[in-house]
Image (tube, rainbow, N blue to C red; front, side):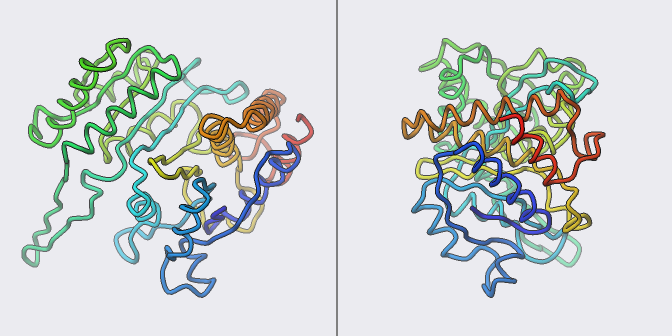
Length: 334
């Protein structure tokens, strides 16, 4: 457990209560990252002991960590993904009963390459008024995420995978990403319908009719932007889970920010982290053949779905509940 900072400790506490009430087959150790790590006496926002403990356990649940804008330390989230080589970011996005939005029956999964692109951190100041950022793409990583995406789609009986790209302009980097996906599809996964689309047109089509898409596969920056766009289709970042998965470990996290402006007020919505915990339990069920984890995940999911249908919602969703009272509402419906 990495509680994070800002509202992180509040939402993680609420989620732990739900998991305990549901008798989730999980034992926790706690490590810190972000501002919370500095406050705990660490000289680094991502201490080695935190990274080592995630590797030892193989699985982590993580609250939000603050990332300064335009200055200060680099993103803890990006550092963690790189150091643990968690190359696949997974963001399921689905409509929820009780959360009215412009669209109904949205059911998308955004899969994002997590280690390269413009997020590689290769930035240089050439002159006083010129800065260059390098976009990095390697054939091995492009093929790796393509394999992962098609395998995910196959295992979950999804019908189609769409690559968003800008290979018409970035012919080498985005071209490499697109070529890798096409090759993996042709050679190994002809069972999945394959589609490629220039990202600006893809974004337009997403907001016109998201039902025409199923699984989206994107490089790092595009995946970051489009996953939040898709969250907006179903009610925002407070109602979508997230995971970062590699070959050795996986970290499940709320994808929203640390919201320091409401920290300590008890009004933060813990649903996104709770949904991420359900993803974590399903991952444990699949990777470790833990049937109890699968059953627990279904019970929690049914309970929070019922809570929303019963209009038991936090303020960001138009309700009146606080962090702990929403957790109580879910626990009552277990």
